[in-house]
Image (cartoon, rainbow, N blue to C red; front, side):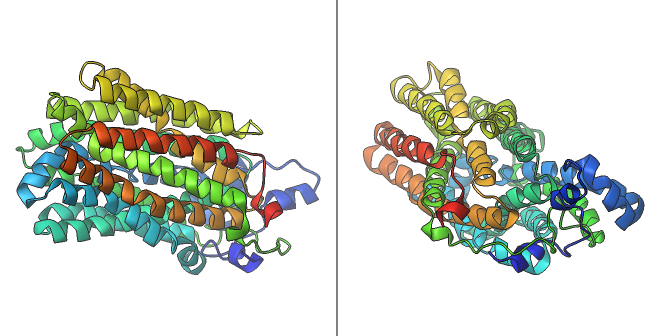
Amino acid sequence: MADEDLATLGPAAGPRTTSTALRSEGAEPQVGPGAAAAESGRAGGAVGRWLPWIVTAGIVLAALNLRPAITSLGPLMAEVRASLGMSASVAGLLTSVPAMCFAAFGIAAPRLARRWGPGAIVCAGMAAIAVGVALRPFAGGTGGFLAASALALAGIAVSNVLMPVVIKNWFPDRVGPMTGLYSMALALGTSLAAALTVPITEGLGGSWRIGLAVWAALAAVAALPWLAVLRQRGVAAGPAADSDRPEEAPVRITSSPTAWALAVFFGLQATAAYITMGWMPQIFRDAGVSAGTAGVLLAVTMAMGVPLSFVLPRLASRMRHQGPLAVALGLCGLAGYAGLWLAPAAGAWAWALLMGVSNCAFPLALTMIGMRSTSSAGVVKLSAFAQSVGYLISIPGPQLVGTLYDHSGGWGLPIALMAGLMVPQIAVGVLAGRDRRIEDEA
């Protein structure tokens, strides 16, 4: 991506407040809420002085909304299937829709960001999530449910891709900690939706439609900080989006082995995550666990990501090679799958914990995306490539699990598939974790 692409990542390039400018004055760069506040305040008054903190709040609130549209569905899948007349294969397709939408809409995120700015696109993404989540239970039939879900997932897709860019622009010297904060909030939103959807549904009269639609309110709230950011167009691009930076060499992302390794790693971890979110509650329910407990078990799996997603990016950013972390997470996943196969009900809590640790491959992948490029321009290209290709790779997984379950009548073959996919995930995680930059390879 050329320099003009980087310069237009925000609504406007903004004043020169980058670490490059600070170094030219002989000072150490201090990028973050404190460093950005002074220039933001001069540019935008009282709101501008608080703008970096508003961006931080926007990142956290956006992250809280990037999974409830998906994990709220798992605990109520049986009710949705019965009401809409879905077979297990069609339900498997439903669990594949997130990956389809993330691949299709995620690839458009860089172009949209160059045209409108990442803040505007994230704000629009939150609005799309709110509308889609509110409409899908009442859209009528499986087709309407899928269409409204696709709208919400489109908003999630573009926000997924642009969050690493927002972090790189606003906090270039704090990629690890800010990615940890973002990942922790994402895991928290994921687990809250899984744990609270059934109790909320029961408390509001037992209608699964109300239980799913209520999560639209959280997305509506998440749009508010980004509206404040958009009002400060002179600085909305972030301190590191500097149009005066020297032109950078173009990067052919498809010629980078590291980019491909990251894309495959992202795709395999996404496959595991969406199979877990879509089918793990059903595995437990078929083993004799109640619907409410199955939802709590999924919440435990997702909740493991709250502390680990905060710690793991910090740890990864201090390591020259992140491969050992990919290996450790993969081994936890293999142990969890073995437990689901051998004793799904008896050791349910242990398997939920192990799967929760394994699912932290997602914040590891995000951290590596931020570390494998030297610039915001490279990060946006790498983020879009790794996530779009990765989600394409993940599309068949949930559908194949549903088909195997239909044909075999049990969970042995689906779980064997999940375990088999964990082995190449570990291998490409080691390759993606090497201390390389895509600019050097391309």
